[in-house]
Length: 284
Image (cartoon, rainbow, N blue to C red):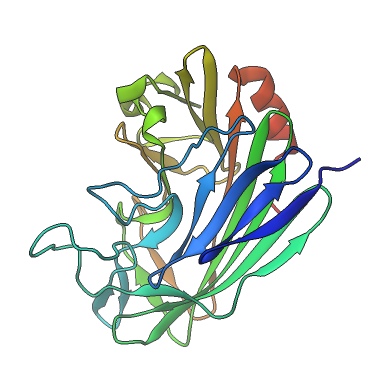
């Protein structure tokens, strides 16, 4: 018998819920500036994302951001969001926002839930620079809760320049308990240890794990076939960034596709991750 999964309403969002086991899986929500994923729980109830960082309030759970997005010689900022961190804050210039065209399209099946977000990327003056279809699939097993994320971004009516920058892509802000300051550690294709050992190294997967008492929990990230280097910082930011080293020229109606699977898991990692990586499947 399949797991009984359902959507439950939240203020300004929705919660994916495992009714059979009586536990939340993850949530999606949005502000005036953009949508993001938060929370994301392990089956045992451990939170793996941070809603926002005090010094970077625009690092929201799992988010997509970009700066600069250049059109007609002007750089638009879809990375930072208010509030400002200082007076003045140099990041708070030409702020665009990622708005929902309509409410999320939600579906429920015995073994997974889906959400599709139709989004417009508007400049500070209101011009629509791009449109995005963001597809999310939520699923659950006994050892982990997973999200498959697929983003398809298209320039609207005009080409866009996406210069090389570190401020772009899919961002994950880790719960502080997963950072090295609290005993967390990283592992990827390039090895295991601190963030510096994996920063700017390509690989299909990355995971971070920590112990709370005698229990382990962690977050597993998989981006097979993309060959991108991971941006990894000990303070808890991970980025999958397609323009970190080389910019892109996005023609009108040309898609830029990003994909990522996230799994919040309990217990010692290797057997669970082997199972989860087999189950994880990003829809085409």
